[in-house]
Length: 360
Image (tube, rainbow, N blue to C red; front, top):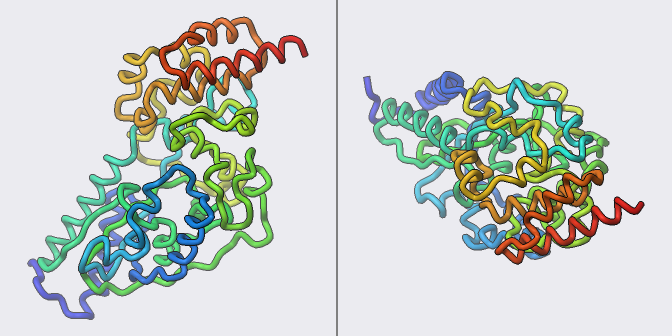
């Protein structure tokens, strides 16, 4: 029977039910926290003041709504933070791809379907179950879709701790997962944060190809390969191009280096399975895709959002970094007169790099 006005004691049971429902819907963890993020807000404002967000103007656009859930969604008193694993079962080893300079490396989260729709749908289903239990429920669901401090909330909700690379970490499942949230108006009991277990380890910091993690828990996004290949819309700075290697969409190095990912669990979601053989494909093959092929093959993928021009820009850089071959030179020359100045400039750089390798 629907309970319209649960008493405080009944919220304890509701919180347990939410965890059960979340597991039934394919989430690996669910935690509940309040909305107090003063410490995280101070860190955010300092990060913005230092300009570490680069061209991501949306990080500053909403002011403190990002760190004050009740200002983003009036009436919010609690946040449910949820995790869903995304590492697919049948995927070529990342290190193998990274060491094969003529192959394309794509961040593991983007090899399958775009996670936004699946996550949002599951979060909405969970919200519907809460609404059936409590008619007074009001709230909104988010998954990387609004000004939400996902990691800070997940940290407070006890679903993991913020690692030195700034991502959420867990002892039993590593960090290969997506985060989602439900902002709601019910005063559910909150969970306790878990302690950090990074210790003196700095592997994520030292392994970063561009040294984007400038100190523990401090990321200069302007140096991050994920930012450079996804968020940055213009020219990739010359100083970073050789360091990008064959990474054409995102970078997983800090996660690959993390000891806790020895315990990572594979996803149970078929939507996250590898599509179009993107875990083991040559740069030349991907560079040959025209815009129609790009849109057709990557429809429903997170990669689709960067567009064909940026796709070619990224691959051109990777081809410039690849071991010299006449095949690569020929492929680059097919785009040397491309209608996009952005593509032409990066192709010219890559051709010069290949010429240097040829004579080395």
